[in-house]
Length: 411
Image (tube, rainbow, N blue to C red; front, side, top):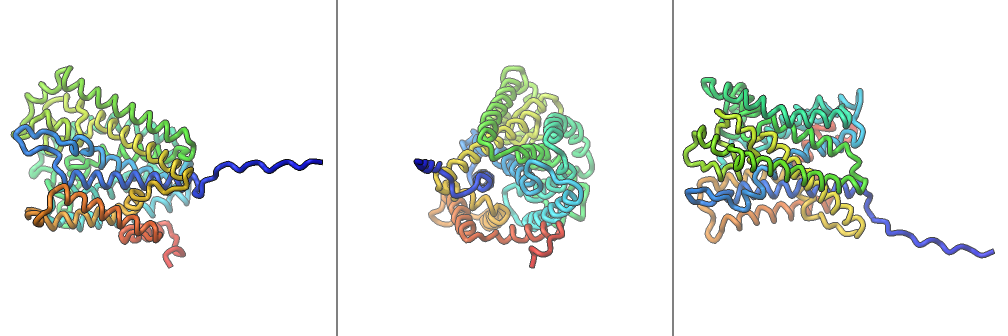
């Protein structure tokens, strides 16, 4: 009787597919953080009369913050139910935990809102998005897909109809600055700004969290899913941008908007490419046909959701490659992505220290950005290697556990 030679073992990665998936999500979040820092610290327009877009504006404006929001939805799906949503008591506990975590984020955002700084702080809007997504956590994948598509299509139309009414109020329901604790004394302008008239309109931006929930409910450990996210996301993003460009340049949209535009100093051609914030989108239905960053139109939402899905697909594939190679390729980004609340808050605070002040001798805008990025990456690597949570992440985690009733983990 002959003995059979043992089969040659196949290559087995040290880390699990689930770990690679989470690392890919964290790394994508790290990229979003660095992209948002870039739009805060580097010029998105050239300093000329035409406001010629820079490569930073063309690459990151509108896309980095949208990726950040989509990943919030992905994170909620992964933390509450992965492929299957929670039900009953578990669902209610999850909602309480997320609500308390959102209050922590809102408190941080309102505190930072009192700083003098030339950037739009996303944290209060981010927290409100967490609260608004709570009713959707118990939905299954097909229902979530329906809500996501419907919200992307309908919310920009309703916002277009409601914004003029809000802005016609006396005073307008618009802050014109980052929300702070003082704004709680005037709730109507605060809510109007947060939901419809501000930099990150929660009413339309809920689309990003819905899309994120859809992505997070997929079987992300299957190799085909990241490939589909990459291919479908890239196709949707390209199609939406192509339709927006055709509407403006070939079908008469830009000429119609030039006729109603009342924003001296804002060349329409440039802002359509980089940032439509600050321009009153009213007086023409053609505004809804734009795919401009921060326009929150259907085409803008489709484009940025497509970009976010493609980026998630890329990083999930890199996570699988890293597992197969047994090499932590994503460490520089995933460390920062695991503690974005702390790093983003520190970034805003440091930027405020230089508001309306000259940069230190020998420093440039590029140098300042790379200092922020390098610090975020270095701190992130140290914390993830030591298996520490960021300070603000620790508070948010404790609030989440308290809301869920998991007191044992707080001891």
